[in-house]
Image (cartoon, rainbow, N blue to C red):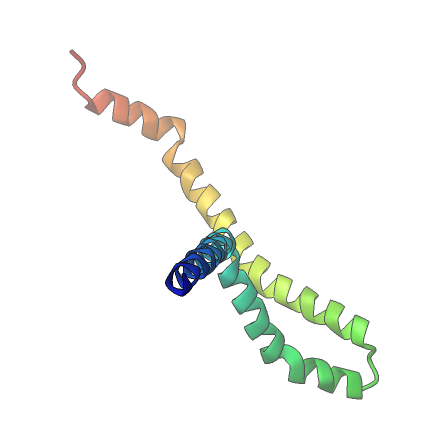
Length: 111
């Protein structure tokens, strides 16, 4: 009788542990796409923390120093991107100009 009682408890606990493991595994899989942004955000927060502290010591408030840092980061990313887009649109404009399309059409052999 004692053996039967142990067997029943083992089965009940095994099902609890197994279902808990499945729920944990599913939770990890659902959150998997968000891990990289969270980790990068934490790294950026730690990297720019000394700059924010120095701006606060200069007399700029915390909110304004965060706004200034966000604006500078935005400019540092948006400026090269916009220059690449302008250069790319000029190149595509030259590539898709009417003269190039006509010359390409004349050089092809149509059946």
